[in-house]
Picture 1: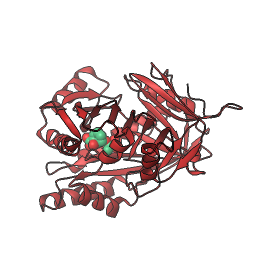
Picture 2 (picture 1 turned 45 degrees about the vertical axis):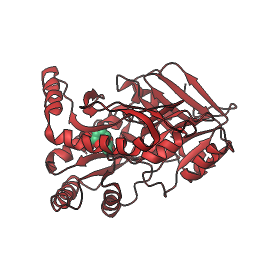
Picture 3 (picture 1 turned 120 degrees about the vertical axis):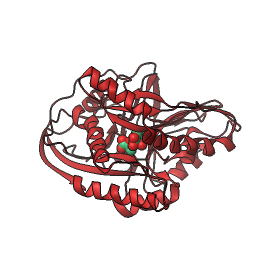
Picture 4 (picture 1 turned 180 degrees about the vertical axis):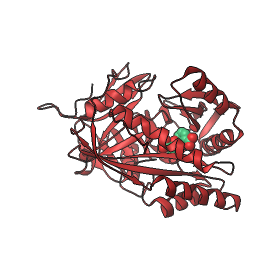
Length: 372
Ligand SMILES: C=C(O[C@H]1C=CC=C(C(=O)O)[C@@H]1O)C(=O)O
């Protein structure tokens, strides 16, 4: 599968592992830092494929590549346990009390009627020993969830400098095959437990939680509103289902539609839909402004990673449960966010981000005491 350090042959620059199969891209024919320009190049036939990462704010630099080859296989990548890493330094942005204050501020803005929902994130910078092996990390992330979800994007290959964006997002932003379009939004979370009875109780409580159903509904409503003008029909189940990663229970809703215009590409759709209220908020423009004021530029976290071929088919995941590695692969930044609505509890929101950070820490074999 992934072989980012291959000698001789074109190195892998993109890997997406999904339960239904995986896609690996090798070599670079063209890099794009402007996501809209990449979509235009695909639409006009100037390029025959685009893979990589769209940023949270489409005006910020993307990491998109027209690869030499795009290889599909029918299986997710084979998972394997990750190598342990020692933490040399760790810094939190912001620390937990400050994140809690930000959540309280968001709840107040919502109570004042300025927003309905906003997703606030925090990040953790870590330096590690030994340097991270990208291939091993992707396998460890795939091993950490029952669906084999994992991804890697060579940001340096796309932009001329930089490292890798690597993660295990469970959340399908959009898949397009012919005229069929599918979204599988996730929003509403409960940390999992090693004890089966406690774990089941957490799942049941999430399914019954009015706060989490409200938080989830903002995402479903947004996707329905954005897709409806482009679809001849669209199916949205009336209530969400429960899904799980290795660390978290989620509410999720599978959405299916049939496109009016088959020429709309998977990348066009990703740009139409990203960022959804699973990572931004409602209303979108006000939530995005609030996030930029509070967090600063997010970069690639909260955007979308995926691929689109010359026929316009492709698959894009929401860029969450991920980290960005520096070029020397000894330092990384990882993120975790959570949706804030009127009924949110600030302490629980801090704990939720800590649980989400475990996806990356577990794959790197990092024991974190106390929790970041
Ligand atoms: C923003 C993140 O998760 C999103 C996806 C699923 C559940 C979420 C939540 O319950 O808040 C978030 O909307 C993240 O993992 O950083």
